[in-house]
Image (cartoon, rainbow, N blue to C red; front, side):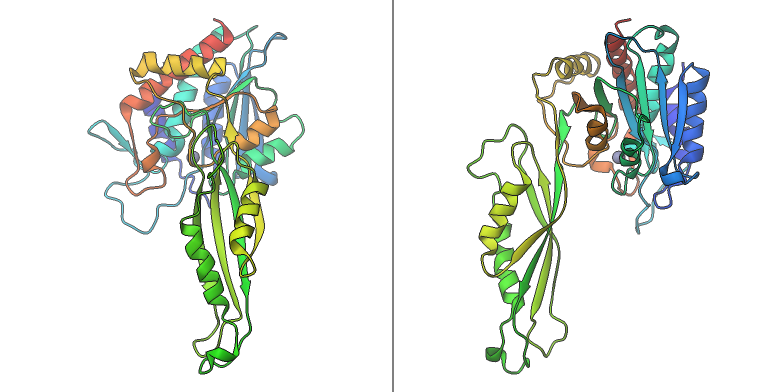
Length: 375
Ligand SMILES: [Zn+2]
């Protein structure tokens, strides 16, 4: 058996900070393990960059049912400005915790997948089989998964998807979407000593910004899952202290949920902006959502409850994942976000993952894949 904790440590020791990523050595290490276990491995370097390999590994296959997709990314975020109290790539263990950049997000999850599927591999011939999608370049806009979707036939097929991002082993039935919007106020400039001669754009933008703080995007709507959020991420106005500003702008980060459309949100923003602020949509990626009564999702919840002893109500992740791009590629199959990492520790200083959660995740992934393949 491949020890998932030892494998997590091996993976942490590959420095895959994005940028620049340099995920290929890590992807090839994982691919080597999978090939020896009987998987067929194909590498797809991101936009042809040989240092940034995405890996698709497949095994089994039958005409009656599509394979199960298990997915994780190999890149990690930068270390941040604060000093770490442990070495971020030594993968030290203390008090039942495995420390290192990527322990939680998400090399623990990748290692749990690999350890589980290698054990099942000898029995998968003639079954629906498995498709492993190990992406590069997830942390800066899911470039790896989007690249794979753009390459004809690269992804293969999947009848359901498991993304092993950090959830403390709680099965989440999707994740929020992201809507980025810019607000723009204009005015008339003039000398700062005579404010009555101009039209100050900062006041207009500030009035609207204050209203946004208390805006409830969900008001009057019945939503099936979590609530949306809105954050003003930046706000700029004016050029120099002794002029009346004739322009002010703000950037809004809105986390979208199922049942709320981007058009609906834009209409609400424009109503609040009125003649003071115009809003423009800069980018939108929809949420991912599987209904809580989906039979496969229910099975996954049952398996996790048996293994961890913890029963959870359905919920969706606040963060974005590769599930959105991969879901497009696979025709939106049922999807669960489930992994051993601690969501609160992702991207943090002194990131760690509980060892028992990595072991539980391995056991859960093995059982989920076993039932999918009916072996
Ligand atoms: Zn992640």
